[in-house]
Image (cartoon, rainbow, N blue to C red):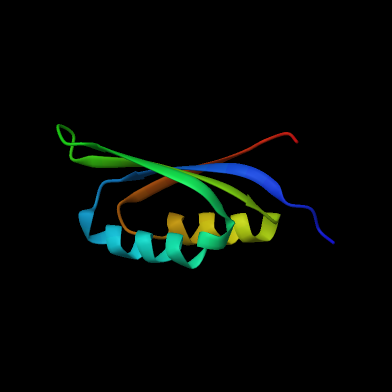
Length: 82
């Protein structure tokens, strides 16, 4: 059995039109998400979201890749060493 990894995906949303697609993706991968936090930055017109996962590497990569293809959305993934 492949081990799971703990990771955080940091997401910045600059295009409000992509929010519903992002939420659909997060819902699709919801069984792997430990928690998430979103902070709107109204002055800059962006939203900052952090998503914490415990999942197999290929699942984390799949979600991260799909997020990265959304228009006006930037993301980076950080992995725990354990």
